[in-house]
Image 1: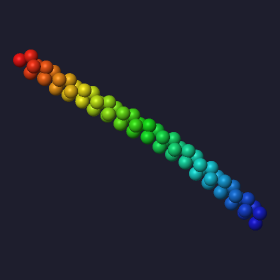
Image 2 (image 1 turned 45 degrees about the vertical axis):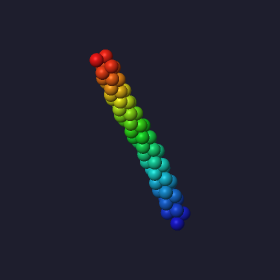
Image 3 (image 1 turned 135 degrees about the horizontal axis):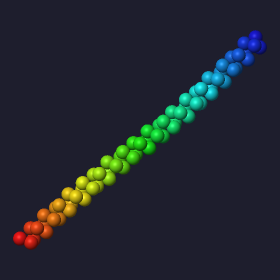
Length: 69
């Protein structure tokens, strides 16, 4: 019985270690994914801002052209 109990304890310990390693790997992967998503969002926001600035510049240029005429 003692040998069976020891073997079960070893198996349980190994399972805990595997679960912990998997959990750490998933945390790293999730962190990497979240970081990548935030970079993508930042790029999209930056791109949209540049488009908006361009649109405003065009509108201002058009208004100035109207005043020139």
